[in-house]
Length: 567
Image 1 (cartoon, rainbow, N blue to C red):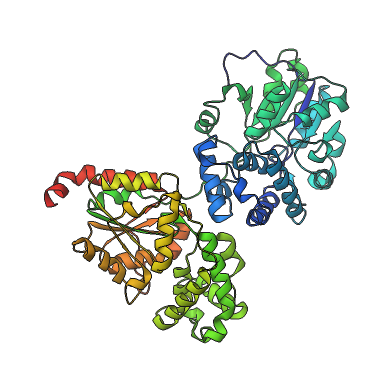
Image 2 (cartoon, rainbow, N blue to C red; image 1 turned 90 degrees about the vertical axis):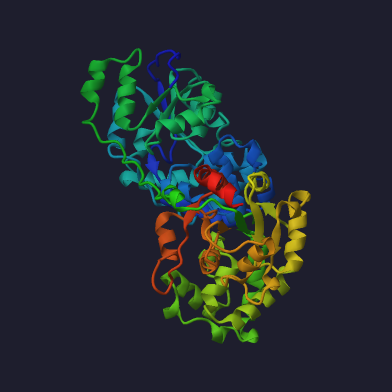
């Protein structure tokens, strides 16, 4: 990638990463990661997540935030399936070696339940490795995989015929430090009787692999089998050019061509030995992002913006789910089990499954708890529908248990305070609407960021300030009444749940869905079906507050003179 680097010399040794380079074990790897992440709290690793400000890239910062809040991988990572567990741990724990060691050990326990799903990463790997061997190049593996897993996978992949190809293999538990420490490479070279120099090529698929190669002072070859775009490389190495690959290839055919271009290689011999070209791996299917831009022109510039509190402006998810866990076993004695909705009245098959699971187990479905994306208000809406009395009983019991857990409140994103201040400078009236009872909300708003946010809002309305809570419009109508405004499209309500959007549309306001949970477009279509029974849909979807701020500025840029005159 660096045009000033010297031409590559013939490799004496080709060291390969395992997962994502030679083999595809993505199914097992991501299953193990999704099993591990909900355990971070009990492993005392949540507080050791790297501060977002210390992250190497904006994507790393988003990953840290998403894992902190939802204990899951960011949906883009799950959709693209391109990032290794080592890169994930490096991104979220930074230089904290002890935290990464704990995470790797816990990961291995999870992986042991999924190991075995392994296949060549692309067609023809065996034939290419045989060619390199016949050229007199020694071939080896250096991987963060544990020995028990590598040996098992090596015996399974491609019928077990790869075992004869490798001069040595070195695993994470053969040395004391994981990549990007160069120990793996040094250990492999020691077993081969080699020394580290440009004639040793390390071929891997991740930033961590390239950093490992540079730390060992060997040639770094990036295997781009996952087909990252050029812009990704530019961003990744913008401030780390010294760690960039010496070369990038997208297939083993490309690696063979690269070897053919190296100094000291007999091209005639290579061409005689090389297999017929195999195609490169296909790129992963793209995640279908919500497309909010076309809706911008349809929005009136806001005079008032009302925000939901939990999971929109702030993160109080841990306390919320603990309180829900505590209350569900009490549904029978509260008389709520018999008042659960009939599954055939549910909005979606997923809602029907939630109702049935709560009826049978008096607990949330494990997937709901793993996702950590649905608010207690939405849970009660799914469970009880239009039964207001049942929901009031549920909210009251939730509050009883929430007293035991609430207190920790964080900004949902780092720039929320600045965004709220900037909105008030436009000028726009700003309010907050929450189904929280006032006793909790007032303590949370005073505690956030240690200084409190009370001064950032012109009004606030809590769940016990009106006879009916969201999704009824009472709270929203009370807020605009407090501000002396009439409801209408110049009043925006921003929230993260279907309940919030229903409230906005019933109040005849502009509904802005804050997609902090990063639902993709197919899922948004499920939860907002636009049917006769469930007609309410957001006017616009934003994935984070940078998009929201751009949306506000765009609307004010289009309508500012008219809006200012009307003020």
